[in-house]
Image (cartoon, rainbow, N blue to C red; front, side):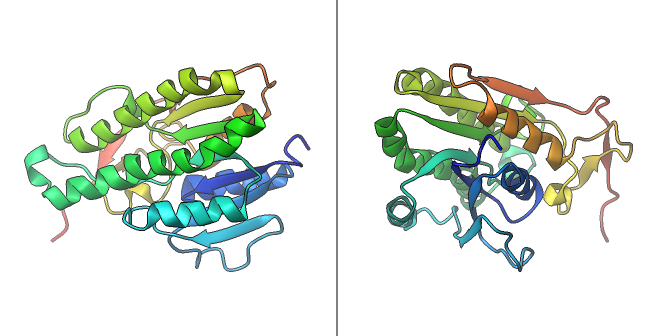
Length: 240
């Protein structure tokens, strides 16, 4: 198992993409520190998995909590920044609070998390930074201004860290999935089409993460874009 001696931190690990990534890494022999707001959907953590309940959107106390995590887990050699939230609509439909919340979770928390763990990785001379972006990081979308802005910025972060950290042996990659069949769409007015060609699965992203982590040390996947073979969006009728 190529990851037997590595400990990887995964955010948003309790369900969806984050859970699929965590389970795949565990099968490969890695130890996984999972961060999420609620692990009630995972009542019996498997061997090698350490759940940590933490709301990354609460920025006021986040730096202190992260510092405590680095002290307890100094051997983390990889970050998978997956936690995120989607909200869509015309810009004027967003309140200032809603804008702040979306940016805080999808971008600022990822910056703070990386900032905390980066020094230890640099001192060891190796590590992996993997950001789960979105196809919304590749082109602006109607009714997606705030979400796209956050994902565009996350892509810029990944690219900048690629240039900044390669000299220290640290690889930075962003994975941009298209529509993934998860609970992400449960509270949204649209979802991918029903055919298996209209969506990708969380397990597809987990395989991409595994490929990044298991690549030869001298090789870096700068960016990976995953898309369903046929892009179909279906809209739900408005609720009464």
